[in-house]
Amino acid sequence: MAGGTASLYARGRETQRGATRDPAWTRRLLIGLGLTFFALFLLAPLALVFTEALRKGWSAYFSALAEPDALSAVRLTLLAAAIAVPVNLVFGIAASWLIAKHRFRGRTLLTTLIDLPFSVSPVIAGLVYVLVFSAQGWLGPWLLDNGYKVIFAVPGIVLATVFVTFPFIARELIPLMESQGTEEEEAAVVLGASGWTTFLKVTLPNVKWGLLYGVILCNARAMGEFGAVSVVSGHIRGLTNTMPLHVEILYNEYQFSAAFAVASLLALLALVTLALKTFVEWRVASARSEGA
Amino acid sequence: MRKFLKTAALSALLAAASAQAFAASITLLNVSYDPTREFYQDYNAHFARLWKDKTGDDVTIRQSHGGSGKQARSVIEGLEADVVTLALAYDVDALRLHGRNLLAEGWIGELADNSAPYTSTIVFLVRKGNPKGINDWGDLVKPGVEVITPNPKTSGGARWNYLAAWGYALRQPGGDEAAAKKFVGDIFRNVKVLDTGARGSTTTFVERGIGDVLLAWENEAYLAINELGPENFEIVTPSVSILAEPSVAVVDGNVDRHGTRDVATAYLTELYSPEGQEIAAKHYYRPRNPEVLAKYADSFAKVELFTIDDTFGGWTRAQDEHFSDGGIFDQIYAIR
Image (cartoon, rainbow over all chains, first blue to last red; front, top):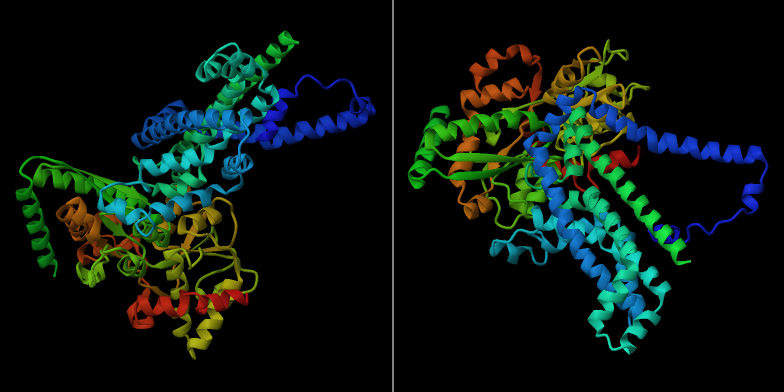
């Protein structure tokens, strides 16, 4: 994901260099290879999702989406994202502000910890929550006796989603804030602004596009997460199934059209994300050229 | 016995009715294994209607499905099942062994017929025309035959597959433990893909087109044929197979906390009623009720069935000997 950041802000700097002076056939071969790969592994599956979803016609498509279990899966997915994204937004801004604008002991350790969800397999992330909150786990017996449900219920799904989407916003903001340095903030403080005003009027406006970019990626992952959520879900229909889990269930029930119909919703979401991402990149690029 | 059950069901219903004078809305969670999805969908609708008529209460039954062993694990870890309807007694017994006050000793005697209201067996699903000529267990060890079965470590159905093959080998002339071990080992040498659950294996065989024969639950084989086209597959019933008894139980610890013991008990007892048995038969589970079985006799091939108790001395022994760490399955699979 750090790569995404780099590409976002390194744009428009490439000029005509060695690679483009290669012989024509080399260029064609490379472009051809790239396009073939793109068509085979990205375009074809995407097209397949929509053709399979519509194989039994539009009415079957919409009835698959309007089915109560599907609706509840959509609701749960939206709920999980609606909680996970704001939580990570607040945390991400706070953490990156702390890391980028301040120097303190344990700063590198904090940076490493933020990256943890990227390096841990989502299944392991789910199992960790099972170990802590299950009836056999550390807190489980107490939770059970007091009537709280965490895993195999909505809180567990939200927790798992928050965990896997933890780094997206912070990872997007830290390099950006670091590259901007602290001069503007220092100037604001010298002019008599309070810490809060400095943050709201100087720091936040400077990073708004990077922030939005992070939110988009975070949201896409929150809605699409499968592994971690699958472990803590318990797979109760109409209650603890998110959209990706519902797709798997439908597929296993031989309801291929319905499975692809729900999958197409997720694919649509991906396309919207892509469009938003491109828009944000374009805004950043134009803001840069105006500034330059 | 059946009369006793009916009385028990009725008294449970009455007790529940008097306890809840006002129409309430109740939710039950049934944690089940993979191939029962379609069956319980129908049965839940039937039971909800029945319960509404008898008590005026609305009952919603929620379902969770997955590999039998995995589902038992989830309930032990806190998935709040009111009832479990798993693939085999051992997985239900795991709740008693490992759960925190989940299930009382002697649960298997709570309901009739070893708490297994319907049975099934293991059959073969082959490609149309049976090109490899697979007619009995003996044909599975022939060179060049690719067998698909799930992993006995994780799948209940796979354990039945394994034990059915073992029982067949014991019944052959000169059949003893050593011969059976060699025979089952030979079958597993022909296994190309070992999925974690029954539904996964069916998808491997049917959708991905891998393998010559799928060892499957009888009901799963019928479902695959009905859903995916009789023009592509056919069922082969072996000369002898195992009587698979999928067990059901009320999860004591959970129903007592939820206050749902009566409705949960009625839910399972109703499985034994003629209507419940008929729904099971329609989904190709072999009903216990002789009249219903007679009515659906055409659905079920005549096959000699042996039980886990008479051939293996019960589930606990079979599990320890065959499927525990370092057990016979591990030995067989290691030298593959």
